[in-house]
Structure formats: C-alpha cells, structure tokens
Image: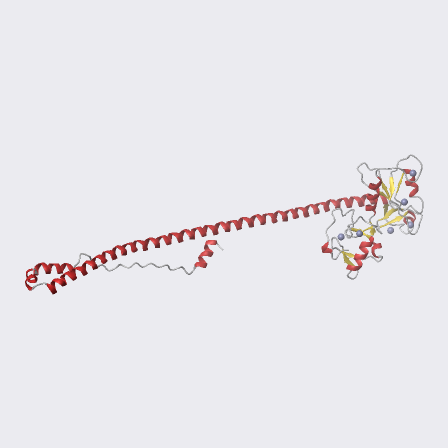
Length: 351
Ligand SMILES: [Zn+2]
Ligand SMILES: [Zn+2]
Ligand SMILES: [Zn+2]
Ligand SMILES: [Zn+2]
Ligand SMILES: [Zn+2]
Ligand SMILES: [Zn+2]
C-alpha cells in the first residue's frame, strides 16, 4: 500500500498493472483521469487519503471526486479484461459453447468463453447474458474491439439504439416515441461514429501535448548536460589561471632572491678583500712602529742625529701608509611587501 501520491511512478506496463499493488489488475476500475486500479486497492486508498469528498489520484495526483457508491462508482475498465482475455486464448479459437466446427470469433469477457458467430448472437439475446461484452478474436493485427448491448432501464426488453441530442442521453425506441417524441435524436451508431471522430481528433492533440512534453524533457536533459560541461570548463580555466599565477609568483620570487644573493655576494667579496688589505696594513704599521721605537729608545745620540733625514722619511711612510682610508659605502637592501594584495589577487583571478 502506498504512503503518499508522490511516492509513485507510473509502472512501465501501467495499462496491464495496478499502479497501487503493481500486480495484474483484479476488477480494474478507471478513474476520471484515465488511470486504473484494482477495485479493492483504490477503495482502501480512497478511504485513507480522502479530504472531504475528494482524494488525489495515486498516479497523477489529480483531485478525484469520490462517487456515492465508493469504488463501485468508478467505471469498470472492461478493455483491460478484454485485451487480457483475448491474448490469453488466442492460440485455440474453438467455440466453447456448441459442437459445430465453426471457429470462435469472439470471447465473452464476463463468461471467459470463446464463441462462434452463431453462439455470439445468441449470447447477446439471452436475457441473463445480453449485456455481456464480446471481444473479437479475429482482427489480423490483434486489435480487440468490444461488442455489447445496453438495455433501457424503463423498457427492459428494449435495446438502447438512439441518442437524444437534446437530452444528451442514449435511449431506446420506445423512449424515442414517447418521452423524447419531439426531440432531435439520431441513430446510436451514427452518434458513436461522431463521438469516435471527436475523440480521435482530441487524441491527436493529446499526442502533440505528449510530444511537447517530451521535447521539453529533452531540453532539460540537454540543459543539464550543458551545465555540467560548462562547469567543467570554468573550473579547468580557474585551475589553469591559478597555476599560471602560482608559477609567475614563484618565478618572480626566485628572481628577487637571486638579485638579493647577487647584491650581497659582491659586497661581501669586496669587504673580504678590503679587510685582508687592512689586516696587512695594521701588521706592517705595528712592526714599523716597534722598529722605530727601538731606534728612538736604544739608539745612541750620534746614530739618531746622523740618520735624522732617513728616519723622518721612514716615519712619514708609517703615518701615511699606501693603504687608503675609504669609508664603506653601505649597501641598503630591504623588501617591503605590498599591503593591497587581496585586491590585486582578486583582479588577477577576475573575481
Ligand atoms: Zn491493485
Ligand atoms: Zn490519475
Ligand atoms: Zn458456437
Ligand atoms: Zn457472457
Ligand atoms: Zn426506453
Ligand atoms: Zn430527449
């Protein structure tokens, strides 16, 4: 048993199976929406789901008026029974009623018996079986047509053979000559032909609706496929751009660090050679000072005086060494990161 109409999908073979129990129909009844269910299935469903005098069709959810007689008030879907009856016995078309060799041409849906032409005629004459439905078994394409007679509820022996256009009611000959005497009437067969034509035209329109629905469905399917493709492309582009930016940033970073390495390296190199030069100058300066000091402290007066010119010249070389005094031209390097990074990145990613 179903819980709610939304739980349902049309069974694939919904012309042969009940949409509620999903089994082959038992006493199929057709709702005004053309959907059919077993009589018992729809009765239980109707009681469970009714709101006032209506309930939603289990398949299409259309609001259905509950008949006064309950599930019995829905039309019997005789066509399901007829199709099933004929297809079940198509292989042995013998008359089940008489002993003649005549082949069966019909099968009575109510009695589940095959009948020859003669027995078929009799069957529709006998009072107890005259309203039964005969399904033909001889259509070359296997189509099933039903033959049935209806009888006037007032004149019980009279077959209904006319249609009163004014009252929109099918009537018997006696009714036509009495109650409907001055009404415009027509032969039931003509009326059926016209009705069939109207219905056939409506069916063509319905086919157009089905095609339109199907086209729309395909539209949505394609749309869904396109969305997936589009999404894939956009995400791929985003990844490519992100990788491109990453690569770019990495390259710039390498270039910048290389520049920093290069600048500091040459300066370091210069500093090293300069300090070596100064070390030598300091050593030689100190040695000369020591030597000159010895001469000043230990030398005899005559020696010092005789060598005055030479000693003064030497002292001048200590005071003014060949090494020059150069103040280091200090290298200044710094890295100041930009503060508007977020905005710029948004620009690069175009978001
Ligand atoms: Zn059922
Ligand atoms: Zn329905
Ligand atoms: Zn027969
Ligand atoms: Zn019968
Ligand atoms: Zn009548
Ligand atoms: Zn009438």
